[in-house]
Length: 327
Length: 194
Image (cartoon, rainbow over the protein chains, first blue to last red):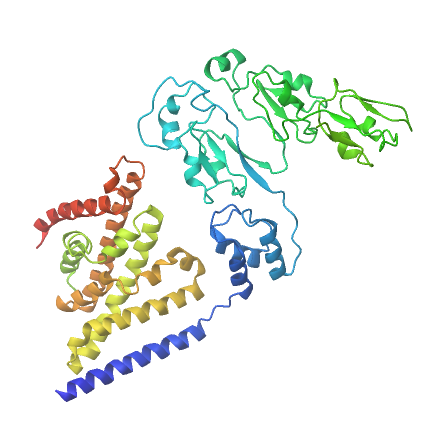
């Protein structure tokens, strides 16, 4: 009896020792050198594994930085703060990346847009899109089944009562998951600093749009005609803003007959010049896109309230801070 | 060598005594890793690999160590120790020699360190009194059967993603119901047993 106990105990102990020693030796022999910076970078990253950097997860990006020398600012959710941390670990300087935000290019919820059929099935935009395109009158608009809200890793996009997705600007990191999930490609990424938006992608004739949606672009082209800097061009019944030319004056938003165009600075009021501060440098006059400012050199300038489109460029350019918005 | 017996063992390990559907071993990875087809494939190949290796090594240890010392009752203990150490060792070797294979097998290798299906193969080989080649074939084919079950299940579960399943059944409940029906279906193969 005792011999069995002793035998089994000893043999197991020996086996354990052999395997343990074997593994210890093997781990030395097969030692893989790992860059300690990789671990530090993984810690610095947000850990959301959103894939916005284009690599599978945060660890994939971290090893990419260390091994392939990827740019340190590719992490969109982390933003400049994380880029700076990684730059410190890698000993480089982080270049600034323009912060972006998701923007939904449709305003036609269930109140504005007409539906000709009801969909009763699996609740997912992609499924709806694959079957009958959802039964909405508009073939470009938001399907309203909230797939974008489900794919958002940051809980930054929610459906409102009107069945339209609303982006929470504070939470949105601009990772672009919703952009690729939307079967109708309605959501895009825009710079956070952008002020004027056209939230519609309908490319149909105005008469058709009018029948199916009360908040759709009717392709009247008024915005393109009235734009003081000719930044808007009508392409295939749809206005396209040339970002390089656009001065964010918001004038297109005021002329749009369906009140579709969004101006984040609205409501705007005309500007006035403080006569005491004005030194007559003519900078504002030169920069006004609609020639609403009159006045000779070294004389007080005046803004014509009828011509002024409240773009605010003169206020930005004035060296003496003499121009301000009317109260 | 008796090839007829090897074929009998192969068919037995894949269909008649499928490790998942009729022996009910390795249910944990079967339910856990069958959500997506590609992860199921990775897991399947890792299991085939480890099962073949484990049956070979466990057979050798059992025949040349436990039987001469008359310590057969230590089988389970020793096999667990061997499989765990083996998987760790193999993982290290693969990471060093073939990084691409290492990333392909990925996290699945350490996951099956203490998988009961792997231990089951080793113990069954001894119980059935298989020779070395027979043990090896049984282990390899057991792995194939496991992979087949995993792939079948993951194919079905990918379809569940878009199916209209009643709320109380969503997720694991419907998976278990499916696994049970598949087990019943596999009982049909019992008629094949020689």
